[in-house]
Amino acid sequence: DADVTQTPRNRITKTGKRIMLECSQTKGHDRMYWYRQDPGLGLRLIYYSFDVKDINKGEISDGYSVSRQAQAKFSLSLESAIPNQTALYFCATSVGGGRADEQFFGPGTRLTVL
Amino acid sequence: RKEVEQDPGPFNVPEGATVAFNCTYSNSASQSFFWYRQDCRKEPKLLMSVYSSGNEDGRFTAQLNRASQYISLLIRDSKLSDSATYLCVVKSGNNRLAFGKGNQVVVIP
Image 1 (tube, chains in turn cyan, green):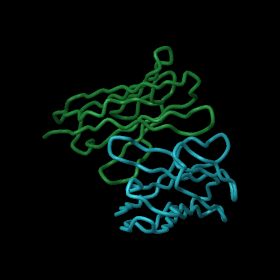
Image 2: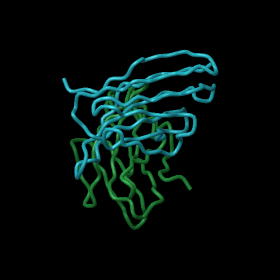
Image 3: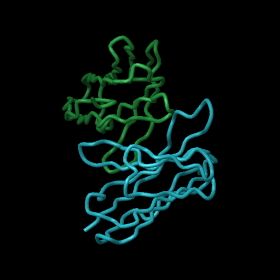
Image 4: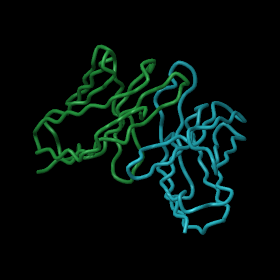
């Protein structure tokens, strides 16, 4: 089944550690996104990419970086994790062009920074 | 002002009843509108797009009011399985989606 997968699904780490979250998709979509979700704040866009090596900042990109080396993969890095980066992280994909609207989400990564 | 605003609730609804809620958006140039459903600790999934003329999908009806900049969702004959958070989503001019915080619906037996 065409799918969006995220690894790891859960991660506990310590302040100052470098963390990478991976997203893979078999949908063949050009566009990929990283969001974080916090209680009471809803989903907020961190970074997005419309094609391989295309990187765009979202509304809360500080403290994060991303890499898009292949169409199917979009990774999110926290260079030096801090406790307020504790959140649920979602990757999403969408088709490019005129049908870019619907986004398909991965199952999420629950990250805890101690 | 937030780009998309929703009253988080919760909306406690007796099984079989009708529930409706709105969300407002701030950007009058917004192009597309959606409702997503999110179950507890799960990923959001598209419930339905919202068209200018209004649209219906089974027990769900969505409406758009551009003049007042709000969209609405109505659920008829509520089922226990409708318990979830409903996210209002607006596509802005830069081709990005803005998400509301969600309306939490709890259907009570």
